[in-house]
Length: 344
Ligand code: 2RA
Image (cartoon, rainbow, N blue to C red; front, side):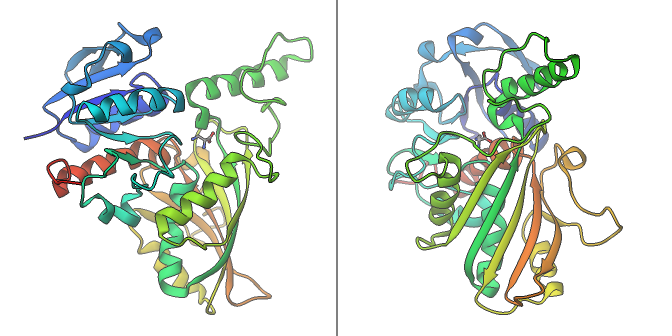
């Protein structure tokens, strides 16, 4: 029968998107429990035809869930995921807390769904970082056909990477900037301001000079692709865009790349759409492809000076592809493969 499902972080940007996707994709459950911080407890949300009252995580009995989706931040996952797994729930976690744990698969279903054939020893399946997911979905196809020597990536990440409060801060800071220097505005997330600006720092700085976001893209890509020596280096940048992360991706391959074949290979990957010179403006942008469930690719070009190297531009809805949709597709695979019943 359909699993009993809990969503921890149900009132946040990822949780709300997950609920919407569960409805639109017809994900079946026998019970649904909406869980959040004490601050959001008592709120009533309508899902499908029914109303649900949000329960504080402290008050929820995880024994009532077969599958628990967590997207309420790393601190909540660190504290409550072990409680959930101990109670028997299989957790699909959207934070950094367990991603590099060897007993926890880090899954992008279009790349490594086979890791869901067995129930993980930790009881947790980790959902990767939002900028890593669309990248590895494309790199998989390139590696299989041409072999990757190295990749260089610059990201253009939206404010919604920090949830609703990130988007609100972008809107408020933009309004304040238009009002002039005396406008009353205090930043919580983005310093310096994100309004009319770009910020080459996402998450904290590490001793290496890279940021944690950049480090996540390296180590998570290696783990998902099963390529422990993959040479991918990134600069992660926050841009004043509400939703959808973009990336400029340069890949040097082992073999010469034919552009037409590259377009064909990319377009043949699951849930990828290539915009290839259909018109002068046939490239994806965040404002145009927002709320889409495919990875959008454009500007595919082999470099003039190296026939083994190419550039592409990608845009992916970070709340969907980069978070809620990937998590739900993990859930769909778990149901389809009978993972809940399978022994570790
Ligand atoms: C961001 N990658 O965009 C983070 C969120 N997961 O801020």
